[in-house]
Length: 67
Image 1 (cartoon, helix red, strand yellow):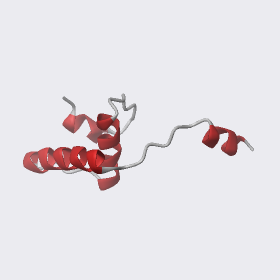
Image 2 (tube, helix red, strand yellow):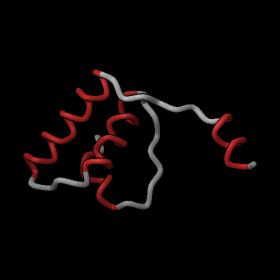
Image 3 (cartoon, rainbow, N blue to C red):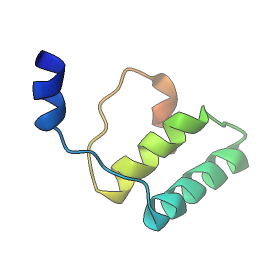
């Protein structure tokens, strides 16, 4: 099955304490701007930041906390 091939060839990044710290920083910055975004998107951004990954998305709200 193609889904199994995809799953076995992918890396799954788990959330940990460092992810939570990134999450908190992003959420706090957004809260201060009055521009909160969906919680799951904050977690996605936190994982990307934690691992210094480029996040490719069409969601406009991800532009809010770029640095």
